[in-house]
Image (cartoon, rainbow, N blue to C red; front, side, top):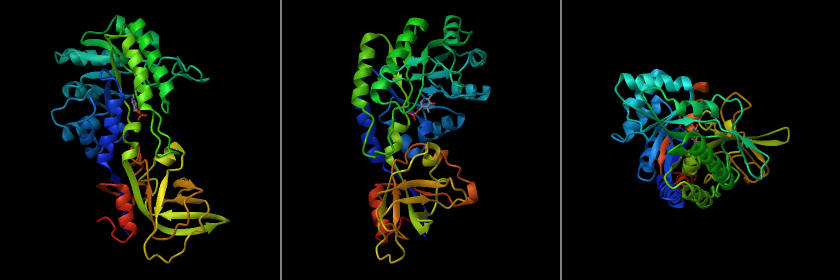
Length: 381
Ligand SMILES: *Cc1c(COP(=O)(O)O)cnc(C)c1O
């Protein structure tokens, strides 16, 4: 049995990322949130397209330094920054540091002063934003992330030595569609300019990815128009976004083989090699990971009847469910399943040592070609 395999389509990633860049006004800076997928090939591919990278740990700083030496990260962010983290971000030359609290700002100021530097920071603000048309308020509630608006105003008014406050960062919600994301950006900028005299605003990531619609994409053109409106209203402002999931989700696929099919009290189960210890996304998000089945050539083992199936992995827990599908068609032992949309928050968030199964393999290529070749009898080597 061939080991499960991640396939990254870096050509498709480059095309998709370029289409995002082209949909945004030139003035809007596009950062990539490394935490969505820190794979070296992904970072190298994006390096030619995005304006910079947002790192959220010392590990991500190291990864960026290894993969893209000499290119300072555009931003260092993340909750719970230790003094060592802050010092590493300063030493790496991170162009901006996003600060989560007044106490963190004081620690950063002391470290910067001690090394003769001035840290350029954005204050992460937990700002209440009303979504027009939706009965939804984002931000403005108790949260470990960011600071209350009053604290940010105070930090901007009297920054500690060693700190230059450049503006505001807000990442208030995820799963936003383009109209909502545009409205949030406008509200954040309005507040940041009025109350903090921000010269720069980073309105975060969180652009929607719909796992029920693998062919669908966030409306980047619509969002670009909304950001153009914001930029036009504030001509001197530097405006920035930092998406992750919506950039890389589509470029990765997780391929594996069917070990067994069985009926349990009237329902079909498809048991595959691997599972949520390789691809945790469906367990983390509570969704069905979309997949296509490639029929194994020459297979004559048991097959499902074409009705709904639950696809599970090899872990001894009922939570090890990759997908539930009503439309998969008949699936048999030896078939290859290609799970799409596995390019963000996938392998890198998985509890990979649970049961000590072998890790997946990694290849670059077209997932459909690899899956079809595998099913036809040429497994990836
Ligand atoms: C996770 C995160 C992002 C990226 O979010 P996506 O949903 O992947 O676009 C951006 N900014 C901050 C502060 C984050 O925590």
